[in-house]
Image (cartoon, rainbow, N blue to C red; front, side, top):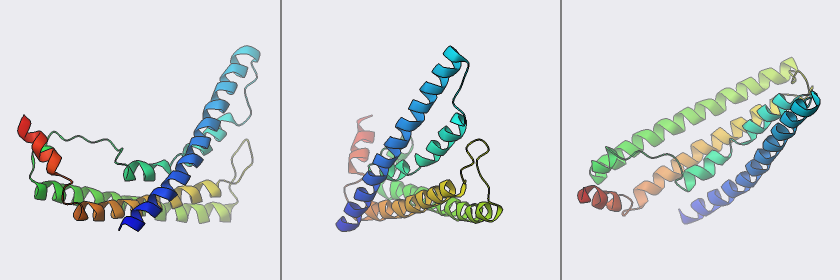
Length: 171
């Protein structure tokens, strides 16, 4: 299990660097577009489409956020449950997340093939749209796998919910 987690973390870190680059491009294009529009009344052609593409490129960061437990956590009720209750709640949530991510991945693949058949391109830039659907599909598929790996890690980590139980007892 340790090798699986290490491999998944390495893949997640690679995707994070890719997503960081996309974020920098998105911010730079937006800043330059707004500046040019305000000062010279001449915005960047296709800036909105570039930003849309970069937003899709941010989707792989969900994987590393899940691995590093950086997702939003509201523990008001969950922390008061027993270890078994917390595991049951997490199991339900993680499985539901994995199913939805798998469905989004599948649907993105279907849409990608439809866009390839229709030769669909972005309006202003005339770039094909399908590579971004492929990226989104891969991201969601990897996220589904990551969620399952994290779920297995929950069952193997016997001390995972001990600190939450102690924290709940303090109040």
